[in-house]
Length: 315
Image 1 (cartoon, rainbow, N blue to C red):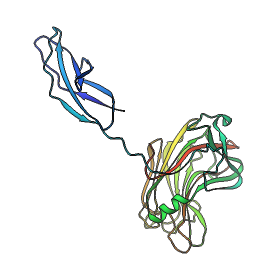
Image 2: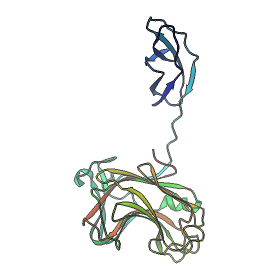
Image 3: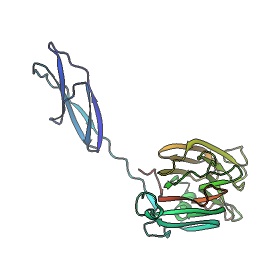
C-alpha cells in the first residue's frame, strides 16, 4: 500500500464555500473543509484519477475540476540476499566458523532464555566476554570471497541488542564488527574495525586497528591507523539495526559506509578494503565480533539476530 496528499486552489462563491468533495475514479473518498487531503490505501504501480468539487452553504455544487491522473510508484525490488543467519536452527551452523580467544564465547540462545525481546524469531546469537580480556568472532567466507575477487559492492546487515551500557578505560577496547583480509604471507588481519568509545557508547570506525593493514592507506598518501568517530550513541535495551556497505578493493577505489537505524554514521570512499592478490593475499571476509578488555560490567554480553549478506540494502 502507498499514500499521497492532494492539494488544490481555494474555490470562490457568492455565498460561502462550505467544503470540498474528493473523488477517486468517480467514488467519493473525502470531504475536507480545507484545500488538501491525505489519500491512503493506494496500490503500488496503479493509475488513479482524482477530481474535486466545491459546495457552499446553500447546497450548490461546482462543476468537477479537471481530472488529475496519478500513477503510484512501483515497489523497490528486493535486494538479492546471498546468505542469512537467523539462528532458528538452535545453533550457529549457518556460519562458516567461530574463533574464540581468552574468556569469550558465542552461543545460540532463545530470546526468552536471555530475558530480552525477540526480534525475527525465537533464537538469537549471544556473544559474551566473561573475563578481563577475550574475543569471540563469528565469520562468513564463501559469498564474500567471490564478491571480493570480482570487486562487487555488497552489504552486511544485522540486528544488535545491548542490554546495558558497556564502559571501559582509554587503554581498553571493544570491537563488534570487522572487515578482514589475508596478506601475502597468509596472515589474517582486521582491515577495518567497528569499535565502541568506552566513555559514551558512540562508535569509531578504525583503519588498521592492529597496525597490520596495508602500509599505505586507507586513502592515498596516508599511513598508519586512522580513527573516524561518530557522535551518536548506540541505544541500549532495544534492537538496533546496522548496515555496512563494502566495495572490495586493494587500491584506492573501495568504500565503507555504515548506517545505524537507517542513519548514516560513517561514509569513507576512495579507500582500501583488502590486501592485494599477491601470493596467498587478497582473501576477504567479515566477522561479527565481541572482542574487548576491561569491560564494565563483566561478564558483558550482546545479542545478534537476522544477519544478512546481500547485493543491496535490506528493506
